[in-house]
Length: 182
Image 1 (tube, rainbow, N blue to C red):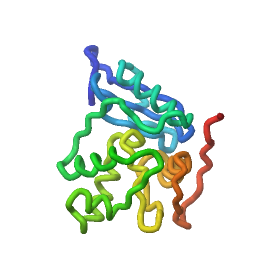
Image 2: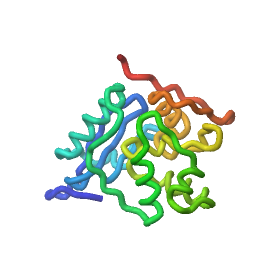
Image 3: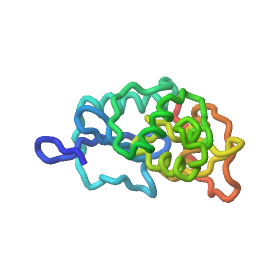
Image 4: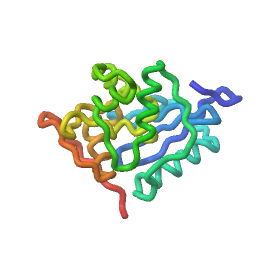
């Protein structure tokens, strides 16, 4: 966790079409982003203490959800293993509306047979949306899972928002997520 000088967390929450979003920074870069799950966020008990990088991230996320922003230029600081960092670096290269498969990610990181490890790294992404892990699909454009928000329905909303064709597993319970007003 990253604390301000008074011991409080650098934290900002925003409302979005996929639920509340909580963004945390170290004062210089975004270090985590969480999407509301079952009505809660990881630091709901903490008061918000914004900073310039959080304000910038909140503005860019609002523009993204309005359809006015297709990429992010807010600084991000990711902490993970060398393999996770390699996977996340590949994700950052993806553009709006562009997808990659787990297998292609494995090839791009020099581990073509590490599908399960690639999936684990994608799922461990601490800054979803900004580091666009939702743009990773299984074979034939199928959603295989999503660890943010309400899971597969959240990922499906993000993909639809970007105009990305995909299929949803038949056993998924649909959750209605409303698009932002134009």
